Each structure stands twice: as structure tokens, then as C-alpha cells.
Length: 306
Image 1 (cartoon, rainbow, N blue to C red):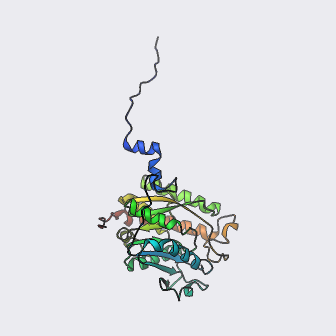
Image 2 (image 1 turned 90 degrees about the vertical axis):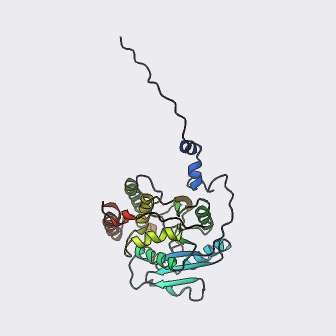
Image 3 (image 1 turned 60 degrees about the horizontal axis):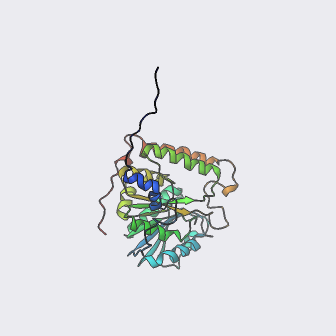
């Protein structure tokens, strides 16, 4: 008679990584599940010589000035100098002339209306040209809270990171945009070998030396630069941190600046979005995914002593 016995298991001591994950400490450090950067870390003041905030904008006359005022109020105590660099994608409203009387805001109107991706890259380049200590990118539609910016800067400093991504919490985008984000996230996770939260988030804080490597490697007309950046950062071994931040609806009453249609009232994916998705997938294959893709060659720069 054959007797079946329960298999024996060898008890292994947990590794430090297992212990951190079991205690929830790892995600707490990233601030992904908790608001604090980590429970036992005091919020030490951040002092920067020069903070540059860069924004792509299109038809944001109703909300962008209040958004910049809110950011300025929150980050001014943390930097000796704060400058704002707006790349205007040839707005059809008065966005371009809105800051003529504001000394710390520079607006660069693009020669052609080229869409969000190229305009974001133009904003990045304008910010880098100002030689800041830290550069923060955010879209001009104001879908974030100014109070989250100090947390972003603290994460960059305290975690000694190359970049901190603001992971959006409470998004109110239409279902098709959220589905698209999830699908892109899955594709990039397969390519990167790990999950990247909110792969296309526009809220990011960069060390200039790390950002410069990314910006110099990508064509100026790239449609989805943040997707490429997220994948390149993971592959090249950048020190990336993820911080959960609040996402709010676009500021202002006008819907002219929305890219895909009349806000959340659109029940089906607009034709323009479907065309954009096809173009973005082709671009992702050519620039980041195929074996000889140019962005595969990106390497993390040597950290600058601080």
C-alpha cells in the first residue's frame, strides 16, 4: 500500500526586502499607499537654489494663472528662486499674453500647433536652458494640487532620487482614457520587467542631469514622451520614486483646451483619440520597444555631487 504524506517545506528566513514588504514599509517609503513619504521620516525643509516649473499649455486662459499662483505659494518657501516656463501650443485664446506683467513666468509660443507631446518636450528644453537645481513638469490644465509639490520635492531630496513621479489618485477621466492608461501600463510593464505606476503621469520632478539624458535622446516631435521616459528610466537603472498625489478635474469652465472632445460627456472614444493611439503605438515600437530602438541605449548618468 502506498502512503501519501504531506510534502515537507524548508522554512526560509525572510530577506530584508521580504520583511520590508511584509511590514508595508516599502510602499510607504514611496508614498504610494500612504500620504507620508515614510512614517518615521521627519519632513525636513527643502532648500533649493533654483526651482524651474515647466508646463505645456493650450487654451488655458481660465485656469492657468490661478494654478501657477497656487504652485508659487506652496514652493516659494522651499527655493531661493522659482521660475515658470510655459510652452504655448499656439493657443487660440489669450493664454500667450496672460503673464506679460509677471516677472517669474516666461511663455514661449510654438511656431506650429503640434500637440501635447512636442509641446511638453519644448517646455522641458526651456526649463533645462535656465540651469535649475530641480525641474518639475506639470500640464497647464491644473489637474493637481499645489500642496503636493512640496511633497514631490521632499521625496526627490530625501530619497536621493533621479526622478519622482506623481501617481494620480482619484482620476475623473472618461472610461476610455483610463482603459487606455491601463493598457499602456501593461505593455510597458512587460517591456520593463516590472510594473510602473501611472506610466504617463505628467507630474514629475527631475534632477537636471538625469532629465537631460532623456530629453537629448528623444525626437522633438515625440507623441508620448512620458511613456518613453518611464520605460527608459526603468531599463537604465534610474533611481525612481513614486508618490501618490491627488488628481482633480481640469480648471476653468472652457473645454476648448481638451484634446479629445467635450470633457467627460463623451461616451465613446473620439476619432482623434483612436488616431492618436495608433500613432503612439507605432512610435513606441520605433523608439522604445523594437530590439534596435534608439532609447534602449540610454544609460543613467553619474550622479552630480550635491
